[in-house]
Image 1 (cartoon, rainbow, N blue to C red):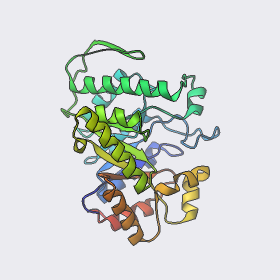
Image 2: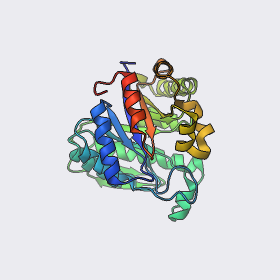
Image 3: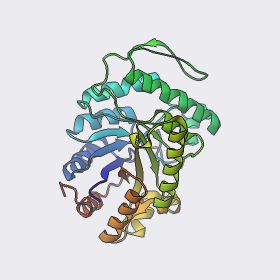
Image 4: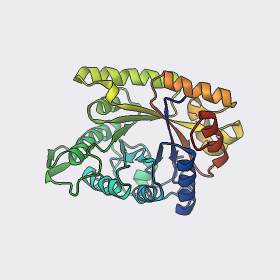
Length: 303
């Protein structure tokens, strides 16, 4: 397990900034390499009563200021919620706040309940993916180039300058999602990292092979894209259902559990499938004991 990077993906629902700051400090002390936040207006269950959720950019900034060493990521900002130029400016500022530890993930969006509640248009999946492709192109150019002009169907920028420049010359850009025809093709063209959630090792391996084929079609070395999977962590079936409720069976294939040896074997299966990074997807009520047990099993330096 020592070749794999480990992270924790912290949900922003049903919690407080103070609780998250304490959690992040503990995760960093345990030796994880990555901590990320999600981008939702409601909880990620899709239930209309699940509305207690902190805003993502604000908490991404809090994460940057609450940690000293870890990479501070987002999995993933929804392209429908913010203009990509606004996201580029935000992540650049976050890179300065974190002294060069920020990473940005972007996805096409899926939580139609949030869209409707906040008056945001929820177009077809094809349109959302078109928006994602344009948005990632703009973000990448603003982060890497001095001047950006882009005229798309959904987004436009004209001689836009993103000053001051990010601390990192190549601030990492992630694309999240498992769509094999469009999402993985977008990742192959624009991303430094690709992330998918709750996939089994076999499903992860298949999607990674599709990503590699998309890279081959444009002459890109697939080794230049970091591949990560978000997994649940539930030592018991009761814990699985407490964390994921009605979605427990939907995510079960991508949840770690069992004995410590079984956990090590499962993470090893993800590594064998091509995962460069495994992120524990954690949501309140946060089980810090479970994270500590995982870090010990994985042999992290702070365990």
